Image (cartoon, rainbow, N blue to C red; front, side, top):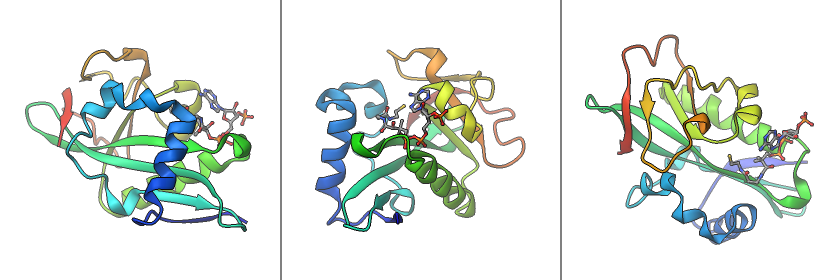
Length: 164
Ligand SMILES: CC(C)(COP(=O)(O)OP(=O)(O)OC[C@H]1O[C@@H](n2cnc3c(N)ncnc32)[C@H](O)[C@@H]1OP(=O)(O)O)[C@@H](O)C(=O)NCCC(=O)NCCS
């Protein structure tokens, strides 16, 4: 059985290792990491999935960001990773669905991410919702996705996604 719990300081080194394994260590050179520099992840939404042997099977983190001149608050989803030996079992979906539910319960209304639309559309992320958003370069605009957690949350919201 898989248990999903909040990441603790004791989990952190293992989570970093999992992200390095899933993305290659140069992941921190990606433009989305500039949005994370010097900003703490949202603790309530940093989750780990562990199996019966307490092995780390997956992890997800979110960062707070602001959008446009008005500084509308939003969440940046990711990184999310599942251990290569556990991929395709639904753990990624479990982590994403659980964390989005927690985010909505905490009052967050907007979520953005840079990722594969064919994967994330099953969780309600689309390019359309994020069409008025810009992202720090270099970012492939086709990979900039967004989802409103409350009706109309992106109406009138646009511009550069920037550091909190
Ligand atoms: C992406 C990731 C988190 C998905 O987690 P997972 O537990 O393997 O995924 P799930 O079991 O929930 O879903 C599996 C389904 O997603 C599909 N899928 C996985 N990655 C995909 C991708 N990048 N694009 C399109 N579909 C993808 C699988 O083909 C499978 O499809 P099916 O349900 O039709 O068989 C995981 O594969 C991973 O850690 N990958 C490496 C890191 C990464 O790319 N993270 C996301 C950054 S955008």
